[in-house]
Image (spheres, rainbow, N blue to C red):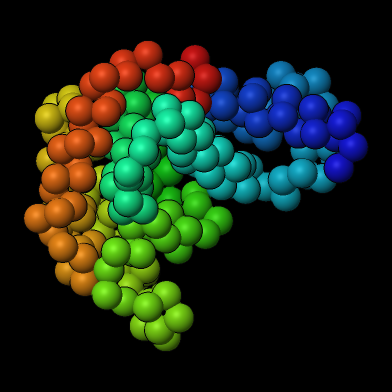
Length: 216
């Protein structure tokens, strides 16, 4: 993709993020995104065949920005599963710290499974599952990923409806999610609880981490 193409695609994504933040997901039209980005409809559909395709772009980029931030801190000695927890704790704590982003996320969760917004849900838990007892080449692995996705979606939907989205609540959300995930993938649950506690300490020590799903 030429530089101008990359810039145009980036502009479309940035404008969509801004509109989603201001108005939510359902009420924003492709026409409005094109108008703000100053592009024609054909340009939009060249990069994204429909509005829903933007979700994978937004969520995958957000997850990657959380990973990049954790990696940039140069922390030594993290196992793959503990690194995963640092990323996920940052991901959820920032996502649930903004009411408009929470409202947007609620709309997205109601669309369906994690595949609605992650191109490869399997990749979301790849690092975590390295410490489990299930081989990624096992035919059952993909079924376990589907089960894990369902658990994450349902627990997040329940969490959204609670009044408290603070760091204590987010830590409990991760403990709830990974109590099930640990059983699915044969991972030491006590060790994961320790990782989650370390991840919380990391997030609290970096309150100015500039990662966000949407743009206000």
